[in-house]
Length: 396
Image: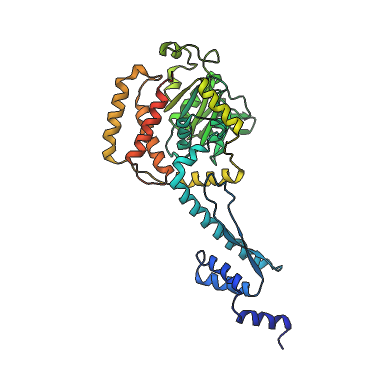
């Protein structure tokens, strides 16, 4: 004899899905193959599971948040529960992929806007920081200028938006230090090796200790740091992208002449020239101050939620896997641009070196990668040139 429960299950298996459940089931069809759909339909008919709708929880100012179906248990069944988790993960992963591809279409506008959302202006600096996030080649950025101008907010945000990053003081006095610390048999990698293949944000780099300079140079140029003391000789990968802040000598820039300002740089040329982009930042003038004040009073700042940060990290991770070609026809334009910079070198804050040329190419590639493109367009090169000029020129 068939039990009452067995009879009910048999009847449910024969009957079609209800109208509302049928609509929900239709929404699952794009995510699963026929075999999986048959299994899902079977347990839907048995009323062992239900379907609800959720979203990734991304802020609407960042991207339109899609609603998607998620299954949930209606009865206690561990076997079905495991399947539901697997199926829900499949749906969520595909929605995330779809959202990432959509975000790539608007990332050139939206990703820079995610950098230090509380700071008004400095658009080119924010754009550069956003590009550094997705760059697969080393791009090193220095924000050199007066205190209280938002430099720290920018580099802190950059470190928060990459899945592999560190943040600390250039002096190395925060926590594990810059390179490696060894106490007995305990070996602790510092900020540089911990950020291997990611972002290392260093605040107040003007306070860097002389003993750490060699390791910083190695990380910036060669992608590793070493520890050589007594009987220990250790090497750690540190393929980092540095974004750092520094204050001038005397803490604040004084004067306007180029030569006067250069005398207030707190580094020797050996460190300064290792940065591809050096942005000179001064205290806002009255018009800039008023604009900042209005933004604070009106409280129009977009804010990043934890879900936003999680999504951006996943977007960055996806973008970093894209190989970007730099076409031959644009290389001539790079040469012409570099030549024009060299001819006007006396106007700029830093010397024009081959590193600048590398920076232009890498920035252009990063701009293409941010849009999830596999080839640099003229537009990307123009953005790179604009960012480079902004970093070289000293605002009056």
